[in-house]
Amino acid sequence: MIKRLLCLAVLITALSSLSFAQKGSWVKTPFGNPIVDTLKGSSGAHGVTVAPDGKIWVAVYQPYATDSVYVTDSAKYKPTKPVWVFNPDGSQASFSPLKGFVKDGKTVALGGFSNVGIQANKDGNIILSNGSSLYMFDYKTGAGLARFDNVPANGMNKPAVDTLGNVFISHVLPGNPIKMLNNDLTFNANAVDTLAGYGRTLEVSKDGNTIYAARYTLRGILVYKRNSDF
Image 1 (cartoon, rainbow, N blue to C red):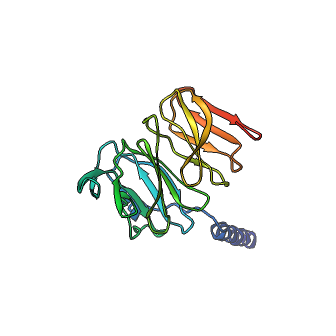
Image 2: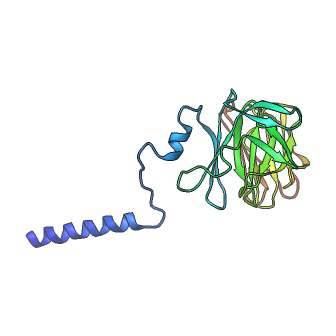
């Protein structure tokens, strides 16, 4: 009997060790890690994405500016709502917090109503919805790559991307289209002319032929499909 119990104990120990050694196993971490400490006291993350180099980009929901950045056009400091970028170990990236969009020597404050959604595109570069503007950042350096100002000027949802490089955007408010942009954030076409309900996120299939629009006031997800055209 003692031998059986001993064998059982050894087997349980071995299986437990094996389960923890499996690749991809999740381990509960204590509160107080660097990312939690950095974002403590904020309104909470409204979007998170991971770049190819493992950096974690966090778009924090901020109805009020929490910092300022020097804007070149006006030659003065303007309020901004930063984006936080963390290394895989939880420490901040060298360019974090990202307070503005910098391109061609000009700085634009991230001053829209809020950072709503964030998503890595097919190249790994980061696309951010900030108020009524869409910004694309180099995932390696945080440098600005492209910008799209949405019309009408309503708050945008989290952007969706496919593997072909298309970028899809929609609005929080109903009655607006789902727009399809090229990989450089230039306008391509309306995928859907009018979207009903209120929502805050959007997804698209990898091939770009199915759009999923979650609309919380409709208590469901609208699904749009196409063969060659929507």
